Image: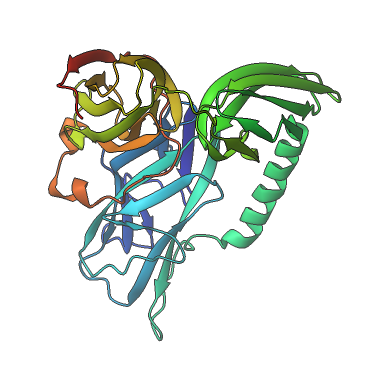
Length: 389
């Protein structure tokens, strides 16, 4: 999936400027990495390829530079109409509510974050705005960025029309809403079609984690249904649904006086928080059978909010086993990992050419859906430890 962004002002120079003097620019935008930012026909074009249902962070995409002899600039900010796309400088988002306050001669490196769980492949225009201090005015010449109000309104209307013409989830049924741990729940979603036949990927979520997906063919001006069956193992109030829609299911613990196995997870961690593309991160977790009988349990391995693998652990009563999982990441971005419902933390994959002291200052992306790295398998390793009493 690709997201393409064009700067809202086009000028016939290598540097996109705001002002009348292209030699001594008031504000200049220049690409940093041609893989993501290029000058095409006088426009700065940003193109970011990401996985579906993924979050990708590019640390250095383009720069905003204020001319050395420029006075009176109060703030600079970026606006665009796409949900799921954010621009960053150091550890702060760049927006109307969080503006840059550059000094004369200052160069600011801008990164971009694309969350494809929110936005889809698209091409839009982003606007760089410059505000001047009271009493100061922009130099004469080509106008600064056009007012975003009418453009954003038009774009919003167009996007609303486009969204309205596509399939949408119009009904969700989850049954039963009360059950005992180990029993199954049935989830049925109904999609309503738009102006043309279209396929939709329905994602079954359990407690915010995508555990299964199905592709549904939705006819134009008609409806289609999709059904999932899912076993719920853990007691508690568990949100179960499709996509962003969910219903709370009350799961009761199994009541029995008979001895039973009880496998629990603890001490889940990663060996590092930052790697380069092609390198691996190692997750370790302890699984302990605190019950009175031998038994087994299957645990989910979650990357970026998606179950990408499962592993079954079989233990004698009182025994502890260390599970070690090794995963290789090829694409830059921040990935959250969890094992058996316990968070392990996140790892940031950083392009080697972009590694700098500022990398660790980027805002964390915990708690969101990240990449679905289905192309690279886990290496599973087990080591027995002494049973505890």
